[in-house]
Image 1 (cartoon, rainbow, N blue to C red):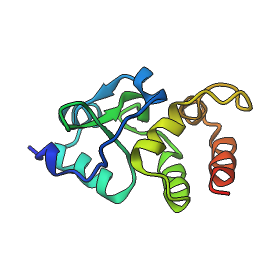
Image 2 (cartoon, rainbow, N blue to C red):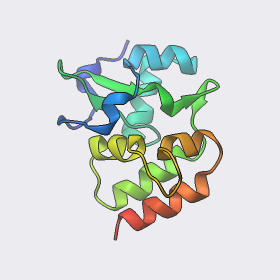
Image 3 (cartoon, rainbow, N blue to C red):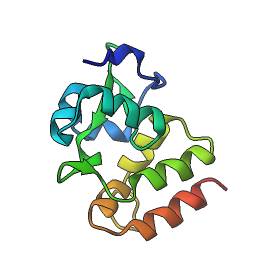
Image 4 (spheres, rainbow, N blue to C red):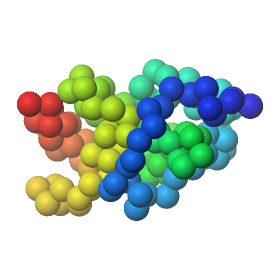
Length: 127
């Protein structure tokens, strides 16, 4: 089992993401049907992001997983936001925040296969 304290996720407050159900690395691994080490690798590679709970453990928003996989388009959005110098906590918050122009939250739009709209907004967020 992966040591969750060794997963590189910056600490800090997360506001909009507090409304999202979150999973431990082990729980996320169960949803994905993989070993916890694989989830840790997905986090390191930027295919998935997590925030830290009050105890410092990595928490993966459950909404970032769908049908036993990482939500389609999420890795690309993560890359765009990291290129814009967003921290992992800021990425989680951005994806969880209501956006009237979508409408709804960006993660909901990704889950509904509206990734193009989300990617355009992520690109604009960097400017």
